Amino acid sequence: MTASIATSQTILVVGGGIGGMTAALEAAECGKQVILVERNPTLGGRTALLYRYFPKMCHPTCGLEINLKRLKGNRKLRVMTQAEVTAVSGSAGDYTVTLKLRPRYVNKNCTACGDCGKSVAGEMANPYDYGLSKIKLAYLPHAMAYPQRYVLDPAIIGTPNAEKAKAACKVGAIDLDMKEETVEIKVGSVVWATGWKPYDAAKIQPYGYGRFANVVTSVEFERLADPRGPTGGKLLRPSDGQPAKNIAFIQCAGSRDENHLRHCSRICCMASLKQTHYVREAYADDAAGPGKSTIYYIDIRAIDRFEDFYKKVQEDPTVQFVKSKVASIKQNASANLILHGVDTEGYHRYAQEHDLVVLAIGMEPEANGIKLPADMLVDSSGFIEGSKDGGQFAAGSAASPTDVNRSVQSATAAALRAIQVVHRTAAVEEAT
Figure 1 (cartoon, one colour):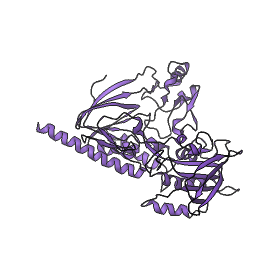
Figure 2: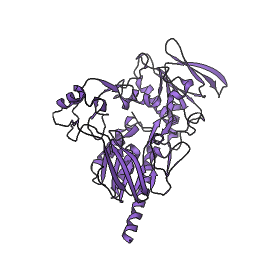
Figure 3: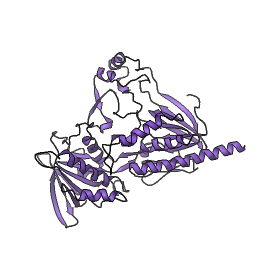
């Protein structure tokens, strides 16, 4: 175990998504020493996997590029990727945190040239495309990855593939002797920005996710629409690779349901409204005619400035709204999907056919799979409320279901609270 590398005046931010990056940057730009840890090989979180933001329909590069520039230029901020918090002890102003650092097997010499990836055989499911594509066992996570360095999958260590990767690297960046490390640090406050994960759609049995190839989740559809995604931005059916032109969007898939997630996930309505734009744009110049989107909803929750965005989608002739909680989905011989339910505005039963179904999947806190300190408070859904001693805070979607904009606001507030803790600690130390 290495020696302590920080002090009671250091703020630790756990999670390198948009919330964690914001909290770390705000604290560092206020002059505080900050350590930002991320358990994955790159920063950016789920925001980096979006095709576009709503309501402006701009690309994630708009926000992430600025944050990465701020991060690279701030000497008070240290980034540690593939780092996981395994223990937190102590009290506000005086925490001891244990980190487990997993090896990347690629050092700072890496130029991201890709020669190592070209040299290795074998592929794995690409986690950054939610498994919809394959990626080499030596890979760059995605185009905006930070640090801009390749990663070797641990499965190839000790195999001829690893030696091929090392031999292919012209700058000596492949280090096959890297080992897992344990690091212990002292910090004054902790901001948990551990983010969210999509609810497991396979648990919603009537919708057939996992049984029917043409039922996908909203996060998977986001990758399908991205030109850098698994289909090059073409909206293709997973079953046969044919264009999907008649698409159903089912709202509250796993949210607002006593059998699944009790809470409203907040982003789902807006995500589906945004994704109808993808359908319209994909077939704007199609001689066979435009694509069609049908949104099945309980109610549309588009608040504040999002109301105008909602109204524009309502005016789109290619979009239909059906006020209904879909009861079940069946598949016919053509792998098309038949949605069954009752339209509550007309109170009539329907059996409508679509060639692709997109489930607007709910947000589950990533913290549900993380061992938090014993004195952390969480709500009934597992979202973090903070620590009993007032020294640890939650930011972004670790605190509640929220969109990118509100995640940034929440993270800024969490950074300010953490700064107050280390200020008080400094005052006490000075007085004694």
